[in-house]
Length: 57
Image (cartoon, rainbow, N blue to C red; front, side, top):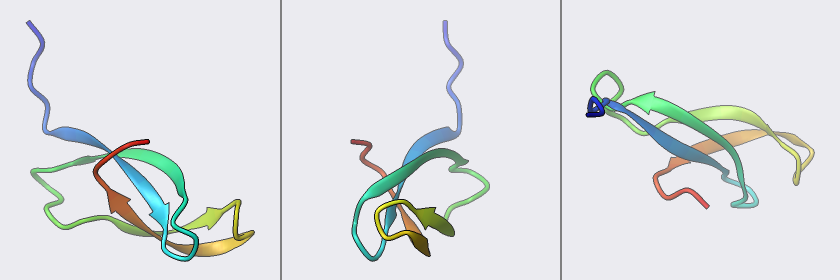
């Protein structure tokens, strides 16, 4: 039997172009708020804000 984990996979989408660039995991017990990180976007060619999106493409 597999153990239930509190870590979930989330996608990070660019706030400028709305393209999903990264997939990461977060602990839903320790980090209750949605992730918002500054990452590099290949589409925009600049560092932009990326926000968490539950549904992975």
